[in-house]
Length: 611
View 1 (tube, rainbow, N blue to C red):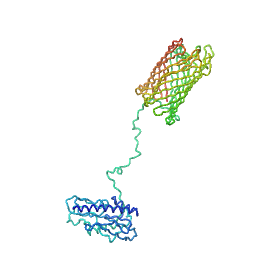
View 2: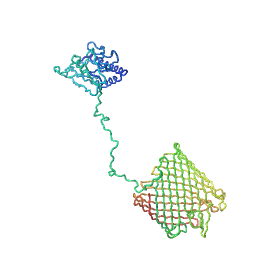
View 3: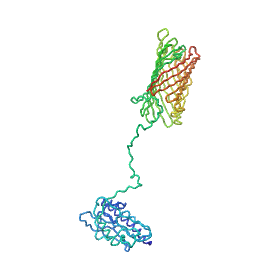
View 4: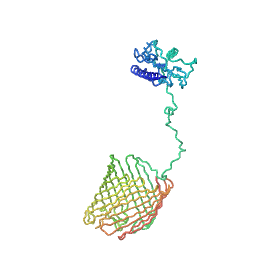
C-alpha cells in the first residue's frame, strides 16, 4: 500500500473520532437516553437502534453537519439526514454514520471503531494475500425491545461497512460482498430494519477474581468443644476468687497447732502448745480507670497447754489510685491494725502481766504529676497510735494514755525519668508529732517537730524487678529542751525481684521512730529488714524461706538491741481449694541492757482452705 493511502486512513480515523464525540455531546444535551446509547457504543457494548456501525438517536438537528461519508475519489462530503417516516409516531432518529475506506492494507490492521461498535455485519474480503487474517464474527444482540424505532432515510447514500483483511478465495461464490458494492448496501439496509437496545451483561472472566470468587461465609461452623485441646493454666492451684460487685475477693483460712519454747517471745517465756487460726482476705478491683486493693487478716492464738496465752491481732490496709487526666494521678491509702504489745518493746511496763493492745490508724492522700521526664509528688500522712491499759501483777490496771500520739506530716518528692524503668528521686518531709497530754506523768513535754530528707530510685522492670529504695536522714526534736533529739540515718526499701519464673525474692526495710514515757529518755530509732524467698517447686507445692533482723538504738542511753529471725515453710495443695501447710521458726534478741534477752523456737502444722 502506498504512503498517501496510509495518510488518508489516519485522517479518516481522526475525523471519525471527532464525529463520534460531537454526536455524543449533542445527545447528552438534548436526550440523555440517546447520549447513553452513543457512549455505550463508543465503549464497545450493545446499544439500542444500531446496525452496520450506525448510531440512531433522537432528532436533534434538521441537518447533521457531522454526518459524512468518504469517497476514494472525491474525499469527504456532507450528507443529508433523512426525514422520519415511522408510522407509529416514534421519535425521529438522528443517524450518524461512521465509515472508513478500509481498502487492502499491507499490515492487516483492523479498524478500532469497528471492534468498539461490535457490528453484526459480515466481514468483507479485501484481497487474497499471504498476510495473517482476523475473521470477525457478528456480535449476538439479546435483551428487551429497542428503546426507540430507527427510521432509515430514503435519500441516504449507501456508505458500506468497515472491513478487515481476509484470505478469502476470490473464486469462492459464497464470499462476502465487498464494501461499497450494491449487494453490501442492500444487506446493510435489511439489517437496519430491526435493532434491539438491550445491553448484555459483562461476562465473568476467568482472571476477574473479584467477580469470580464466592463470598466467604461469616458464620463458619465452630469445632466441637470435645475436640479442642485445653490450654494449660499458668497456676492451676491459684484461687479463683469470688466476684462481688466491682471486686474479686480471694479469702483463705489457715488453722493448726503451734508448739513453741517461748509462748509470748519474752525473757521469761515458757513452753506451750497453741491453737492458731488466721483468716485472710485479698480484694482487687476490676475497674477500667481506677485501681483499688484491700488486704486484711485476723489471727487468734490461744493456749491449749503450757503457758497461758490469749492473743488476738488484726489488720486491714486499702489503697486507691485514680487517674485525673493531664498526667495527674491521685493516690490514697487507709490502714488499721490491732496488735498486742510485745514484752520486748522498749515501752513495755515492768511489773505488768499480759500484753496490752495497741491500735494504729494510718492514712495518706497524695497527688502526682508527670511533666515530660520530671515527676512531682505531694503526699500528706496521718498516723494515730493508742495504747491500752496494762494489768498489774498484784491486781489493778495502769493507764498508758500519756503514750497516745498523732503524727501529721507532708512529703514532697521530685524525680527525673532517665528511662521508664529507672527514676531517681529526692524527697523532703516535714511534720509534727502531737501527744494527747501536753505534759506526761513525769512532767515532760514530748510533742516534737519532725524533718527528714531522702534520696533514692524507683525501679520498674515489669514482673522482673519492681519497687524502690532510698536512704537519708531523719530527726525528731521534742518541745522539752531536757530531752535530746531522736536523729540518725534512715533507710526504706520495698523491692520484688523474680530471677526465674516461679521464684519471688522480696526485700523490705524500714526506719521507725519509737517514743517512750520513761523519765529522761526521748525514745529510740529502730532499723528493721526482712528478706524472703518464695519458690514454686511444683504446681501444687510452694516453699518459702525468710531471714530478718533489726537494730534498736536507744537515744539518751548507751544501749541497743540486736535481733534476728529465720523461718522455713511449705504449702502442699491437694486440690485448688484445700492444702497442708507448715512452718519452722527461730527468733532471738540480744541486748546490752539487763533483762531483755530471749530466744524462741516454734513449729506450726495445719491446713489451709482458699477460694
